[in-house]
Image (tube, rainbow, N blue to C red; front, side):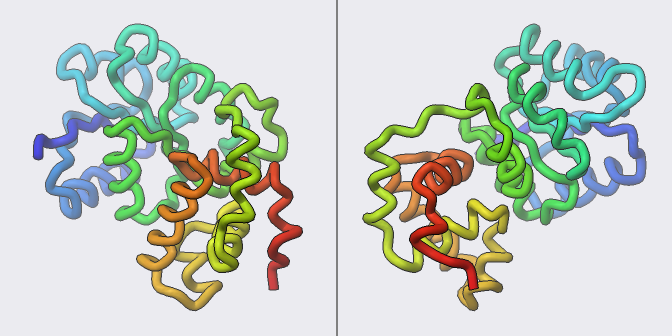
Length: 225
């Protein structure tokens, strides 16, 4: 399998150096092309050696992440950008997505999950942190998300009780590990249920599934204990 070329961009030197070390240690299929500390350096790096994916911080000096993703998307449309930031930065999500970001993850994401997200973005799947997704859904004007077909909303009743529980917890912002702990089931079991939920709802990612859950008022199907 060809390696995925990734450019890391963050002005927090200790964080970005640690991230480089972790990714290179746990993911044999990921190659870090370079490290940049602001958007200007990132664009210079891209000109030298174009990556396939850029992991990009939002708040940086010289040139911030939102402006950087705008330029990358315009000049290098084949390069996918994933914002990697703190929870307090969610105010920038709409702008980043509007300008072409393919993902928006939090810096406290487990390394293995980040690797999975990088691989997913490589295949064209949008990746958004569940906690950010919940906040987005609270004030979204709908421009950043695909419309959900009425047939998908009606499909909520085709889910098993367990699948309804898991989908409800997804809509509350829990990740797979947290759902497993809450329901006393293995993380892999949660993943299997999530794949089944996607198939039954005719959706392809977590954000679309969450929108179905909210549109269908899933809380009426399952009340959190």
